[in-house]
Length: 346
Length: 164
Image (cartoon, rainbow over all chains, first blue to last red):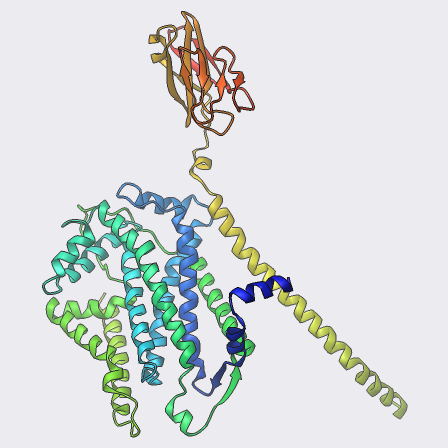
């Protein structure tokens, strides 16, 4: 065993990595709790990979088979309802964890140089998570999936110049058909995972290079200590993962994800139809104002949010620090407010 | 209690403490192993059963008999491929009342066999296996066993029946 390891070592020098892992320190302070959020997001993504591959063994895309196979998974396949339920629940929890992760990074100002690249890769991962949610939503081919895709693709079609073309390529024509299911399936199960894993690797590498950001106030007051990453923080991380796994299992087992009746283009949209919670703020804006205005407004706010490393760089005086904090609070209140408003009006 | 009694008690406690601590560690370690094992079972059992579920198990009914009227239109020396349930099968008309039917799956590695009227052999193109059409016996090449035979009969109302 020892010689096998040393033989591997000759070809793949692992010693520096092991050395780095052993010396890595994680700061502990009163806000250190938020450091777990990225790890929780990662955990839910790993759950998505495992359950997604499992579902691939039973799901059949195609207009004739998509809903039938989803129904078969829910009713005939052993534990199929549980695997699909975990996949759906974990998707939602992943979006939630990423949101909390992003806001905690925003308030700790962990997006400032040299961590700005980490911030941008994180935003790319968030965008791709939405695309995962959007493309996966169609695959069971039930009534709500059908209308969610119709609305989503129509919104995309509103993009100036290229919107219509993109919408037609996504749909495989001007209507949502079996070809649309095929394309969303290819994106959801092949294209997006490949790109996501590449960006995620870069994101995690950057986190390893730059380490955890210590909030300015904490650093100035020197109100922190450090603990070794291995094994102390790793054990704590795994413990949090175990908690996340328990929460996920309980939710999936007690509230199995529903499957609606098969999509039917002749059926009017059901009363009270609405998107998942993470699109409810946009949904509310769409109800309150014309579509181009709503999308421009959301796009502009999102763009300002994305380029925060540019308008709040790390400076000695931190002159824009307060502004950024207020912007973060305003964004949180805006999103939560619109979401509550949207649910209130259902 | 006497002074001696309490001294003894204290000494007992001092000696016992490392012991109970050691035992507590042992119990915790053991508990962690049991709980980890339970988690592993809770993960592996659903995954394996999920993967083992197949459409074949759901169909349930196994085909034991089919009607194949078209076989009656064959001329002697001709053959026809047909589906026996989900499996491929072959029927060969040897003479006016002489039909032979087999499951058409080669016993070597599962290719579907063919009938060669010139050779009067059932042959498999994959690895050159040959069977006797009269008995289904493997007579040349790598097949380790004869073809699985099917029973044929003409019913009183003139239908051609193939049975397992």
